Length: 171
Image (cartoon, rainbow, N blue to C red; front, side, top):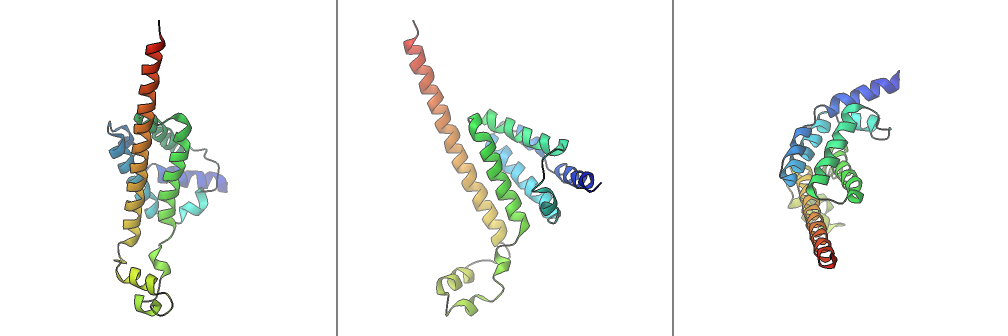
């Protein structure tokens, strides 16, 4: 039926995503490459997001994709309680950046906004409209990875302190 067809479409798109990058020993490079591959797959099929985004995740390719991401984040040292929120953030970033064009919402030339919205007009005039959506994805991905790197580092520092404290208490 219709549900099986939608699951098949989802499965086919997810098979286009390079999950092998998540095995990279440098978790940051692996997650970065994964996010880009994930985004490219859905940029090739932007209308599929509306079909698959609000459905239960039942197909093997999608479950494998999330399992690979969870494993990579775990190997990176992210606490288990933070893994799913980080995967959700990645989903929001990737899928959100493929559903719409932000800059496309500003159809008029920058000068047409100048009288009523001078700061917006200046920002639009300084923006390369051909690349702003991709630039925004790159910036958001970099911000996410930087924050994640800090969280992983703090988690490792906390585990190290706990081990030192435990070893001092041991007989």
